[in-house]
Image (cartoon, chains in turn cyan, green):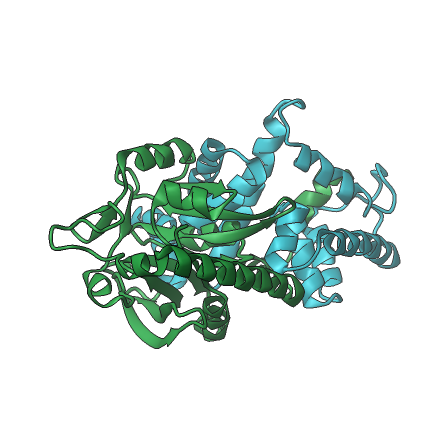
Length: 186
Length: 270
């Protein structure tokens, strides 16, 4: 079924929308959640909650043309929250490492003045990514959107882990500089 | 602002970037692949020499079904499936992931693989099994597939086995084609009744493995892409699938699959 038809079912409040969305995108959404949480049951819960949030948010949202990305964002958000709910001991080391990496991109840590909404900051990051080559974009998004381990990114792209690590380091430095130049006060 | 909030913010990058990163995949760098192929070729030469001496090549020709449905490697064929021994079946079930109907097993040598599975090993050097998992998970295929990549590790190549099982069912078996058994060629199993398959091209790989690339189109119009199947003896070794978000993207996958198929190698039982 086309995305537009599924969205239309959501808009008409027909429960079949959930079934069609699950049939079409369930496995991929679950894979995203599993990649972040590393736990099958939690991933399944995130997937199911994704449909619930989609049910509640469409309408007013109309993700025709980008339904998967819309659902995937919800799944990612839910999976990240699930990670945060875990006790510090149980938190995935990978997740902790990722947040530490992202802190390197912040020009002025913990300065609450002028704090940006995540969405606005996300748009700034998006603009920065579009200044990069496609390979760098993919490496960055795989690492910080899909939360892939470095090893998995290297395998996926057929490059060495050292290249991935170096690319990520330069991307983080570049993002930090970009945000500073653009006058973002984080 | 903390790192976690930055991670949240990354969630709002553009949809096109998310999709591009999801489907991005490249073949391994040429140098490692060549090295793996050189290794495979050397292994084949050694195996060929050993096989010629030990009469194994004749065994290869005998990997066929007999009229009673039992092939000469001791496997039963029931309803078009090659059924594993109970011991092997239990081994696979024990290795099955708790939350997914699939399992991965890796063996240090071809001999170990074949002792467990009993078929000639058809492998693709350097294939990332996790990539294959991704492809399988996007596939509503209810048949049972076998993927046998040679996985490069720091300790040398490992011979892998990935099996997806029928969701919720206890059966684990290897799809078997009667046509394949009769002619030693490759057969195609229908992927799903809601999908149609159209053969795009048929080839024989440099190592003599027949394979076919089929174009998958869903009746619902929500899935497009290409699947690669290859066979050896009576068994179909389901290859990999490349499934796209948009049709124009899928059109680039044929060459990618051909390159993969050309890298296939076969390892004979010792």
